[in-house]
Length: 73
Image (cartoon, rainbow, N blue to C red; front, side):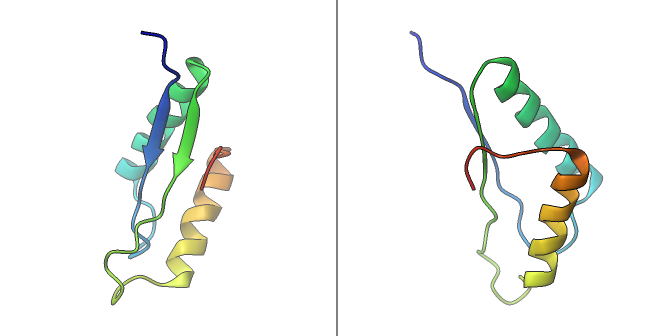
């Protein structure tokens, strides 16, 4: 079996990225990079009442600060 690695991180934009989410994103991103795979960011929009553009932008800024560049998303 010779399939490429694809990982996904799917935060919800209902608040700022917290330390646990950042840790999970980092682990996924490093795992994909180590194995020559793809890292996908998918911001969940299942809670439309609490989701805001401000939190969406804050999540993206946090990933920029962490140095994570996503292949998709």
